[in-house]
Length: 189
Image (cartoon, rainbow, N blue to C red; front, side, top):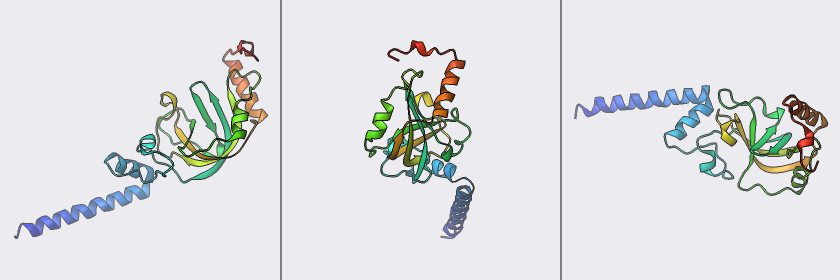
């Protein structure tokens, strides 16, 4: 009986110390604390019901928000360029954002039309200016094709879609030209 009292006291002190350390960790770095809790078997508390658990894993999402940017889609690419998202989490990937839809994202006719519109001088690259609602990952990770993206944006609703800004297209053409790309190689353009 005497042994149980000190053991219970030690257990209580360890539990309180662990809870305090966890609370401090969460206060200092919420994404890392939530990801660690997920990795030991707790649910990912940042996951909304629109995103399947196996798709998100233990990657932590920020709050749902409305952002505007340029969507670039091509072979093995789905880039979302939005200054409103700020810089991606440091440490992994190449610093860009992979764009994907949630399981509840409805088709958007304006976006479909724009993405089907060829851009002269850019072979099989589809571009659109978009305003979307969704969630961006806040934990560092390797997202998208071959894990080269630093962040993933899960679009839940397309609010508006239209042609890309001319300055963005010009910058993309200039980057392709630096790489030796010849627009004459594009079939049908």
